[in-house]
Length: 229
Length: 229
DNA sequence: ACATCACAGGTCCTCAGACAACCTGAGAGG
DNA sequence: CCTCTCAGGTTGTCTGAGGACCTGTGATGT
Image (cartoon, rainbow over all chains, first blue to last red; front, side):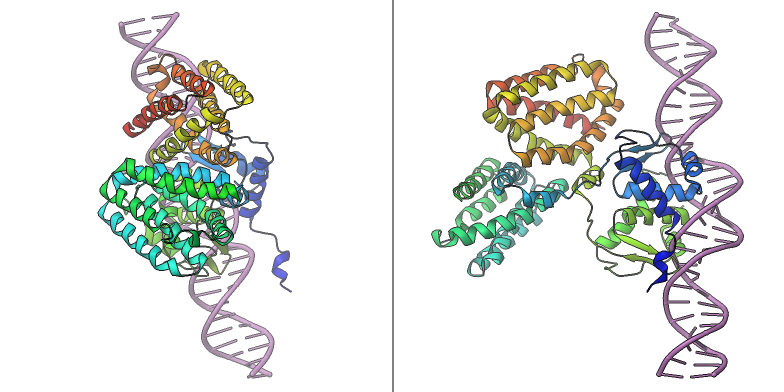
């Protein structure tokens, strides 16, 4: 047995835990200013550098934020639950509706901002989707999502890319199920290739209205299928 | 001076960002041992305390773990951090752009779906915003955000409500700063009350086009201010 | 009376140095 | 081959110092 587990944890971790409890426990609400480093050091009975490292750990966790000359402020009271996981628990219809709202606007932006590199990536993703048409369901869904991700990436907003990435797990789960249940790929001989090609073409041409319309039509159709289930 | 005389952001954050990139970029895979604190200090051109705080921030984010006497080890390469924290680090302009895309569509949806309870909540939020017009900046920003949250809530999609909630901390931080820096409330005698009233009115009447247009105009104006900073 | 400005105090930021606690691997000894 | 010892390197902690920055306060001028 490791005797090391009995030894007291580093002071920094004790201090971090203590401060975290003050925050999550509501003693210091959002927006509150924490006592100064010297005061905290005295209160906790540790050195100033130890307090600084504890505060830095909380900052890394997104609970506090330091402003030079002003103080350290609480910016969140919870470790912020995983939004992506919450999405997976939500109704797929609700998720898909929001995804549609975001992605249609992203496609319009992409048509305006896409670079040459974006255009090449779009073409490659479209080819990959065609190639996956004969593969298994999961691989096809992945390739399909990759095309949509490429469109979002072409909008040139990193926050947008991150946001779409949050949707991917939930989308993947829901779409694989949908494809299996309804056999969409059999209903549709070209596996939706025409719609995706039209989307990529519109973005490449820089036609925002067409890009938005084509994408919205495609997504609305899938959304209708989801509501049928 | 390895980092130059100009300090756009605290050295700790620069060091944290640099180390984070090494990890997320795959330069240091999971299980790898980072160079010693003294070595990192020399490499980054900063003091050992600064390196320690940067490492502590990464530890708080769950990327690395320090073992006394052994070294600092990578325990995850993915930012495993929550989406909301990532938003706070993103450029406020990018965040605001995405927020605009989402919220304008939400407003259109709200105009179609709002219930009587939604209408009452909207009116209450609008009144609260008026009352906060004479309060301090933070309270006013909170009341402003509450109106927008009420609009999003009226769209009747729980995923949308969650998504907007993720934006709130980043928005709050950015807007408080903006209000303080530019003194927007002084430029605008009615504190943007007319625009908000028009938005609430359009949603109440069920006019989707008007709701989307009014909101887009207001958000685009604020976005322009952000780009001026 | 109001607006503007300078300033002092408090706060965080960064560095340097010192010592303690601890882990790891190499080598001595059995 | 196994065990023990130990030296070197590493993180943990504290102290002291000075710089940079923010904010409220009071003096000043209009």
